[in-house]
Image 1 (tube, helix red, strand yellow):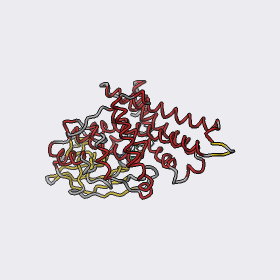
Image 2: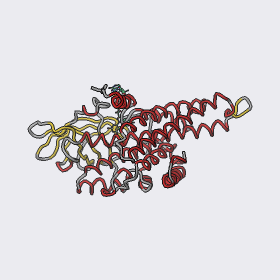
Image 3: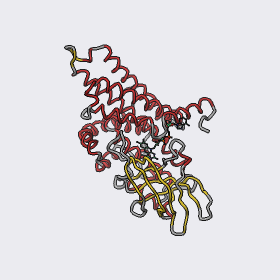
Length: 383
Ligand SMILES: Cc1cc2nc3c(=O)[nH]c(=O)nc-3n(C[C@H](O)[C@H](O)[C@H](O)COP(=O)(O)OP(=O)(O)OC[C@H]3O[C@@H](n4cnc5c(N)ncnc54)[C@H](O)[C@@H]3O)c2cc1C
């Protein structure tokens, strides 16, 4: 792995890993059990480039190469899935704001977000618009008093822990004309809407919320970017989110490998460490191989973007392969731990639950396959 990174990249990896191992890892089990999250730690993480890394310097960000951002997400994934998801979503919100916020919006939302004083949710998915995100139905009707929003959003990460969000809606003018999907900034301090957490299996230190808008009033100045430009803004953030998820999955596979090696060396059966049994070695080697191949694909996607290529194909392939591989790595790690792996006191129990998430948000594995199929064959299987 070290040979794949230059000196600066290695220094970043070592520094962030050391911080996460010392300051964050010891907190994980208690937070997961209580279903809480240490929001106060985030500004220290942003100093490494989390969240700020995907925002241009001109907009107040760190504008890190994609390879550096990939390393950050890999390390977050190795430490804690809930942390990786939280910084990924904050990064997507920051990225959209960095691309589209006007000066007043940047002052009010982006600046405090990059300082770790405000936190935002990313509201695209709806009950009837998941993989087919463009089919969303939430509307914002323009009136002299502001936009009147009606509809609902589903599975919105950390909406309960955030104080504003980017809501993707269909913008309709007073005459009823549909201007297409548009981003609206929704500030909990000025707009009323319903939020509740849906109990979920993975990432227990995040909330996964349903949002309901029933004649919710949003100020006219809260339109983000051009009316009708919301889907391309949102999908650009989702594309970056794909690589982040892929790299988080690489980190999770790495954690499965490290925990399995440790366990197999110390657990004894039949009078010797189980590390000496051939079938055990086969499982450990499979985890190692999945981890290394995943890492290579993720780094390749990051380097393609840094070389000026669009990287969509590479990011889709990485998201698909790394997500599926993390699921297999976590299954093997759990098997290697025997009964201990099923107990909540073992980290592999958490890895197993969190790995199930890697194949779903930011485009499921099936949707990635269809993007790749279209790129290879020139025919879309979607419509
Ligand atoms: C933990 C978590 C956090 C999330 N956070 C957010 C968030 O912060 N913001 C947000 O907006 N969304 C979020 N999501 C939503 C996520 O993006 C969607 O769950 C995802 O896009 C899939 O949509 P869906 O769940 O409606 O599944 P569906 O689209 O209903 O898919 C169901 C199944 O059908 C398959 N499928 C669908 N269409 C096709 C097709 N054309 N061909 C083949 N198979 C197909 C899918 O692959 C899947 O297996 C989150 C989801 C989860 C689980």
